[in-house]
Image (tube, rainbow, N blue to C red):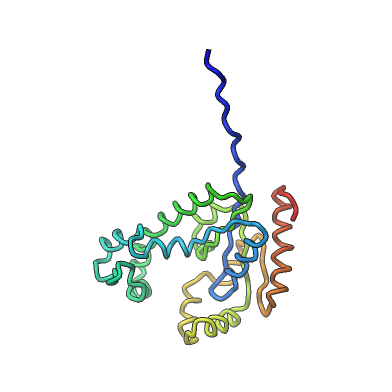
Length: 216
C-alpha cells in the first residue's frame, strides 16, 4: 500500500498595500520607511524601466509597434523620443501601455507570489488612473501634499523648469482623484523625515490591525 502523501501547508497570501502619490509627493520615501518596518516592496516603475532597458521584454514589441527609430543605439528604449511621441499623440500612449502594462502586471504577480513578508507594498504610480491596478490590492495608501510643494520639490531635485513639472502634474491623476480612492492618507506637506516616519508607523500599525495582522 502506498503511503499518505503529505503536502506542505499553504502559505497565507501577503497583504497587498497599494502605495501611490503624485510626482514629488515623497512616495518613494514612504516606501523605504515601510520596508524598514518589515514590509516587502514591489516597484512598478523599476519593473517598467527594466522592461524597456536593453534586452528587456518590451523592446521587440515596441520596435514592431513604433519602428526601430524608437530604440536607441544601446538597444534600450529612446525615452526622450518616446516621451515626445506620447505627449503629442494620445493613441501612442495607449499603444505603449498595451505593451508595457501586461509585462508589469505579470512581474508584480510573480514578485508578490514569492514574497517572504506578510505585507507587500505595491508602489504603483498609476494606481488611481487604472481600476485594474486597484483590483489587485487590498488597501490603498496615498501620499499627499499640496501641488505647489510637489512643484518645488521636483524643481529642486531634478532641476526641471516649472513648466515641465506642471506638464507632468497635468498628465497625472489630480489630488482630489487620489484622495477619493484612499483608505489611508499620509500627509507629507512641509513634513520632516522624523514626522513622516511617525505617521507611517502609526498608519502601518492601524492597517495591520484592521486586517487582523499582528501589531508592530
